[in-house]
Image 1 (cartoon, rainbow, N blue to C red):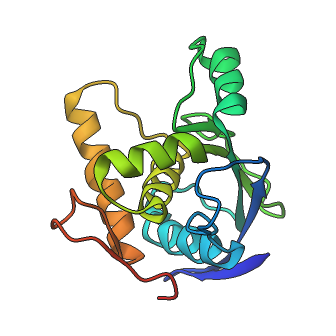
Image 2: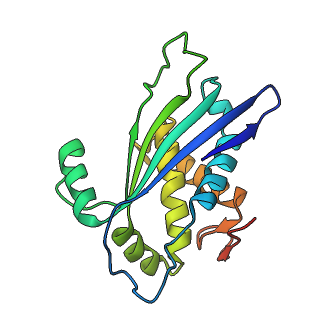
Length: 189
């Protein structure tokens, strides 16, 4: 699915590949975690529009989002981070910190892959007393920032990154408990 992104200087296309690869029994009667591909697309479109100054110029941007369970994310975490335990989100950036010049301006710029564990996200949502949808948006925003080179190596960079995450959530009208102590979700905004 491709969506047009408008910026002051150019029009670019963004493409998102959403993969739901799991069999989970989080809340069998609930479809709370079922966020449509169109909603994910809107969220990432909005976020990338607000982060254009952090992106290298390209005719279009692509990324992949994989929603999975603890078993698979633990395997990824062990293989790529040498941490044999589940985690909430992993980001595999396709870009180096310094983007080589010149970029091929005829091809989409692949930003990388974001992998989120629904099981861990569900536990964290309960611990934070907010919805799974809010937690998934939070984790996706966190993963996107990692794809764009943000990191949290110390308290100062962590605070900067968390502040930017809150801004991204506000841009899509999703408010976590740490943001204005308001829990609000507008999926179709």
